[in-house]
Length: 181
Picture 1 (tube, rainbow, N blue to C red):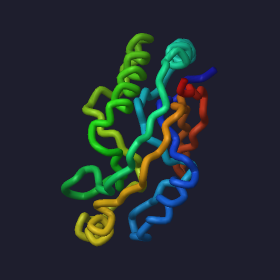
Picture 2: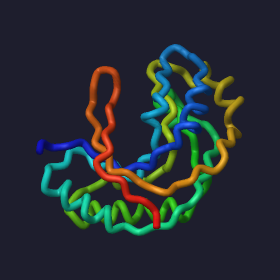
Picture 3: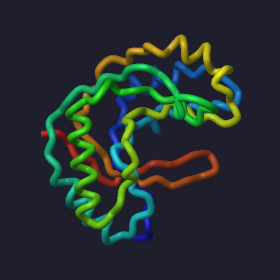
Picture 4: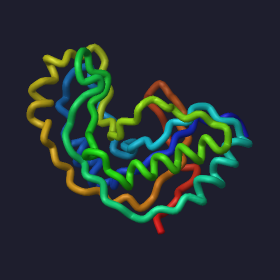
């Protein structure tokens, strides 16, 4: 088995993802994420060889968590100032169950010798990627959706996914799904 580009994430229910795609403002230079690709990344792991990937699967499968609900709130950009690279949907402030799950996933990766991205984690859903778009051109859309409320999303599983980069965007494959107790 070859090296895989891996991440651990939470999938968005199809009905919610479709509704989010419907927010696409149609701005030039803004490429909206397809509904089936929308997810919240718990940990990006990068290129992983087969043996550590197998060890990671075992550790992730042993993670126990209870179902919880995640609030989807507020549309903004990364970075918040300057030229935006990403349009993102926030997930409320400091959701304890989400941060506990993130820590367990990160600890599992560290235990098998992986170094996940250890920069400060800002949980979000990437809605679109931007290229050559100014914040000024996006301002009407951002103002109209700053207080967007997507409701509560049930979180009852997380997935280990492989990501294959193509000229038309990434293709994700679920390698493992771990369900809530």
